[in-house]
Image (cartoon, rainbow, N blue to C red):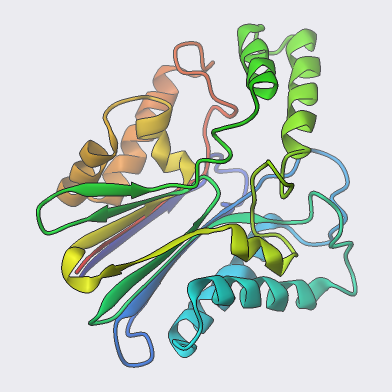
Amino acid sequence: MRIELATEPGDPARPNEDHAAVILPAAGQGGSLVLLDGVTPPAGDDGCLHSVPWFTARLGGALGELSVSRRDMTLSEILAAAIARTAEVHRHTCDLSHPRTPQATVILVRWDEEQVEHLVLSDSALLVAGPDGRITPVLDRRLAQLPPAVRAMRDAVRALPRGSAERAEAGRAYGAAVEALRNAEDGFFTAAADPAAADRAVTGTWPRAEVTAVAALTDGAGRWVETFRQGDWAECFALLRKDGPQRLVDRVRELERADPEGTAYPRGKRHDDAAVVYAEF
């Protein structure tokens, strides 16, 4: 197999909140892939003594261990168990009911000689290549499909001058509106402290013969497609296959530096943590 990983913090002065891992072999056969994008909390209390990297390291570690040791469990069951295991570690010191308790997006892929299973929760992207060269994106689109009123708030924020008091105030209102939809009915879901979120993930199974490679990207790397519009997901996959994950991350950084204020390509952060895992069977 060809396995390549790349990850880089959006700000060198801050810890990288992404987590990426590949486990081979999985209980003597196949393998598994784990990719998490930790959710950066706003300034203020989040009810937890622990950092987002602390959370993603433990949730990611649990996902990796369970995916290789418990092949009798579905990926949704594995995610639910990993969330519960991680929550138990800090339940007695932290307020896990707080809406901004540490949390993350999740991609989990597991394969053996017969099949390739996948799970996607929130806005990281999974790309699946078939033997005919076709690339199928597996996406959880709920965060991108916010209610029209909330999208209008986002557009209003982006229209205001960066650094202005008006933009800061509008940004806080928009952030609050988005947070009200997090892990809520008719909103979107991330892995936090409630195992029930696992039932909200996008899941599926492919015959192994129909998959030649997969790529998992956090949204910081997926900006190449979704923010900077340099190509579609098939073209992004072609770049990964030819030049590898680090080249994609480097290209995103070049594009971000060319538009530092987000004038041409509006985005919430100038730079974001980026992680990519590429696995070719």
